[in-house]
Image (cartoon, rainbow, N blue to C red; front, side):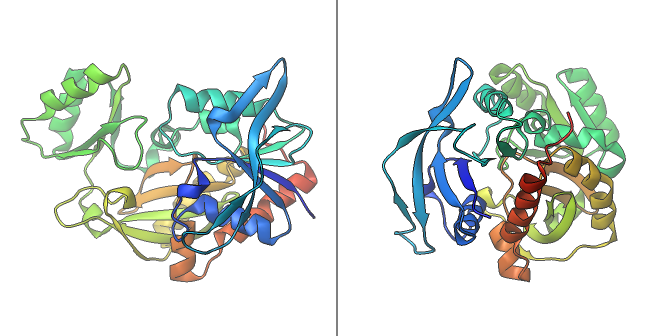
Length: 321
């Protein structure tokens, strides 16, 4: 099977080839004989029903400083000239992100888009967890300051973060008596009309924030991300250190609960965050951790992803809406 793969992503020339998940996916696609081209969301066009992108075919190699060669740019009809499109640009999950998802959604059933853009735009990382309240910590989503104060009073220590943030940006850990809550909420609400999400603080975060990767609804493996000393955030974007980890009974229960939903929605590559056995996020936009998992455990999620993608494409297995 030789497929035509187009990847919507941030500039590939700037990625860290030893850590970037999209690079690993593209390299595996190339190794399987698929043709690979890339484009930025800004290069996506809807024109009187046609959906095009200004793409560049790439040749990839795992060689630092020399990992990609580009063919000349060309306008590609994503319906007629692509079999699979990967939606892999990093958040922020803003109106530009949502617009790209709306456009790519229209490619079905001619071209398969993974993760499925209809469900990507309907499943922000901190919102999809609200479908499974029994699996996570106590959570509040609100702009009502009185409600947030009452939640903090009940919970004691809390985490407050932007509802559509990413990479650990804007995440605050507040003690029960911390006097900065009002000022923090003023800062959030002056910059955005969105509510914030507040969650019960989980002390086990000091031991790490486990990233579990699921492929087509099945648990593939996990790494643990440990925060730096004095830091409440374990995201690798802000200095968290990845360590080897396994899947325990709590992890498997979570995966068995959410897995069928992910599979049904065409969310083939997903990274969930688990702290102390509690589900805190479901990452479907551009989940990371694939290279770290392979390095620590030998599990090749890039290969598992393409096994699932090829199977879905051959069966024309588009998700239910």
